[in-house]
Image (cartoon, rainbow, N blue to C red; front, side, top):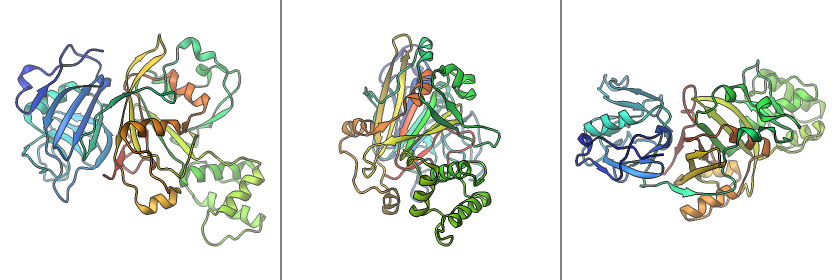
Length: 409
């Protein structure tokens, strides 16, 4: 893919053009904002093509750090939070009010949380991007770098879709009561078993989050196992509603376990898995979105769970399906986990030092089941991304978003 150029009119002192050529695929664009440097760096195909000064949130209104994508664009928008303040060339990063937009850019943080851009740069950037372009916000001035690793997905040719698959369950990610678990069976082709949403939207970039299993995933397992052995726990949605609570307490009474105190205890979990004849679930979860909508999720295995994963971002900058090769870039973001979160997750050791080492070290620890990998590789496209983080997505991730990962740096 060829590098995209800013037209000459925008290349003033606020923007430095590094390379230029004809227009390329917007899916290969990546925006990185450094709050320490008050700069924005624009990358295409992994190469830096332009920079600009910016103004991020002032004290008390700090711009959040993390991994975002452009959710919405409007040439003219007025703030619904700050007295209808004008926000020309607005590119929304969260539905709670954080955006890129034209504004006054002094040499210091001055906004109420948004990322202000100089006028001509804001206009030119707006004309280049599209919904879904990733925006990374960090204190430090991080940069993507090329990475090749066996754990990273590679495009699968259509001719490969008849490969033998082992049994695995892919949970529909919106937990609609009308949906069934998608089961991949032996001797089925991937085209016959892919979730319908994947088939219909094939070609759009995938958004993948790899994280640790939390209470929601544990409750989903409990709901499935209870229903399997005859205790109706309702739809396996990961939430402990009244039906789930009743089923849990019914099982506890059957096994003469305490029904007071915490709902989920190690004694209860062990007894439930033993009664269902099930092995303990893996300790990781892979979640997939496409076109700002959830597709499915599945359990995976993470090696050395006592070691922090850190927060890492990988993105495909080019796909050659004919050769079966994808070019990946990666970067690591600083993210300090609170002591309480570490204790809850069982983390007692930090991840490997050094950005390059961290990227490879975390990929060494991730084991994606073959059927899940084949599903993803059949739909891999330029702009597809993987976020790896100890903490799952927060409240900013929802309807009409990609995975939004907020970091503490």
